[in-house]
Length: 140
Ligand SMILES: [Zn+2]
Ligand SMILES: [Zn+2]
Image (cartoon, rainbow, N blue to C red; front, side):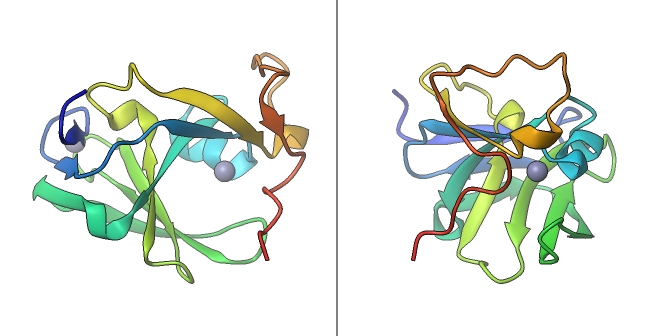
């Protein structure tokens, strides 16, 4: 496994590195992620903001009002449109990277599916994973 994980957008103007290992992917089937990704779901990898460094470019911000009512800041490449990461306005210490922007994610796997109640009927969801009809329950 490489020491640092790298990723970037389709056109290559935005590049980033993550200084710690990442393993778990959470697939979000909410309707906002479907629109924002152009796919059936977004595949998200949670990383501490402090571990992520942008080595090229700066993503553009779209401030989305999530179904929960909270502001979810969605960052994407202004040139090619690739979604790069999302961040809850109330949780700036965490970044939710889009797994498809990682250069190599061979060691990772989907461990959880959320917002399955709005999943597209043609999306396969592994029943062996942890599934939630809406957001994952908050840990208190
Ligand atoms: Zn780009
Ligand atoms: Zn979502």
